[in-house]
Figure (cartoon, rainbow, N blue to C red):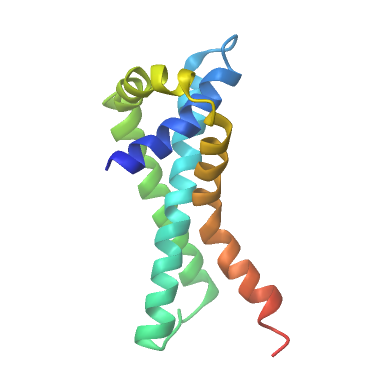
Length: 135
């Protein structure tokens, strides 16, 4: 859980720093929804690998797969909203890691790695679609 907390903190710290002159709640919402989209991407990637490689099947219709993906994103957004905003876990993470982050000279690299972790599950199917069609 420590790695997930630090991943969330890197994203939240970026939005928090960029919105110092704006309302802090906006940074919290942006972070929660970006984190839920990234986590949803991981769940959908794992689900796609499971269905295609283990079950050897697919969804019956595009509407069914769209509804499934939308429900995953919505449930994760509600769950992360409850965990990080309602329970104020993001404020606890900010107070825990902020001093370490201010002293860290590799802060920008950690933010880029955090973004790559959230974007990776979208790049895998995209690269398969682009590079896998020629064979």
